[in-house]
Image (cartoon, rainbow, N blue to C red; front, side, top):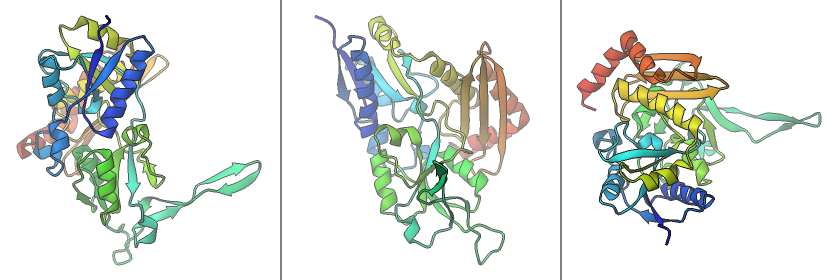
Length: 340
C-alpha cells in the first residue's frame, strides 16, 4: 500500500487553501495525501501586536512540533512567515511558484459615503475608439487639509506589520496607525466594523481565496516582505521520501529569488518583525534585486538595488552588507535597543 502523505496546515481559510493546493498538485503526480489541521499560537492570540509576542516563528512552531513528533509528514507555510533559520531537524522541501507579491490598501467599504481624506480618481479605457469611464475609486495622493494648507488630511490605516507601518509612515508621516490582527476574514470584518479609512493586506492572501474587494489598490511603491507571495513546504531532515515527493512541486525561479531575499533578511537581523523589505526578480539571464531597511517610525531609510547575472548566488548577503555600511547599521542598532 502506498503511503498517504500527511500535510500539516494551520486551520485558517487561507492556510487550508494553500495546503489543499499542494494536495491537488501532488495528485497530478499520482501522490495521495490528506490534510491535518493544527491551530497555531499566532491564530489564537488575535489582540497582541505581532512584534510584542515574538513574531518570528509564531505561525510555524506548532507545525514544527507536529513534524518532529511524526504527526505529519510535511507542513505548508506562507513563506514570509517562516524564520530564516529553520528549526533543528527540519528542512526546506520545495518552494511553489510565486503569486502576487504586492501589498494592497483596502479602503473601508463605506469610504465614498464618508468625509474622507482621499482624492477621487476615475480610471478610463478606450473600447473601439470610444472612451469608456470605469467606476471611480479612491486613491493616493491624499486630499489637502483645508485647515492646514500644503498638508494632507490625517488618515487612519490599520496593520500589525512593522514593515508596512514603517513604509507607510515614511511616505505619510502624519497618519494614524491602528493594530489589526487575525486571519484575512477576521481582518476584513474588523475593517468593516471600524472607523478606519483602510487597512493593508498582502494581495496574494486575498486573491487566493477570492476575497480581494473591489475597493482596493496595489501599493506599487511599497516593497514587500522577503518571500511574500510564495508558499514553502518543509519536512523532517531524515525523511527522504517526503522531500522527494515535495520536490516535484518546486519552482526553481521562485526558489532562487526567495533565497536571495531571505539571505538579505538573515544577514541584516534574521527576524521578520523588523521593517526589512526585499524583492528579487529574474529577467532572462539577470536578477533584479531591490531591498531596504527602515527605522520603526519610518523616518530613516537605507536602500539599494542591483541588476546582476544569475550566477550571483550571494546577492542577498552582498546587498545586506552594503546597506549595513551605508546607514543600515545605525538603523539596526536602534531597532535592537527598542527590544523588538
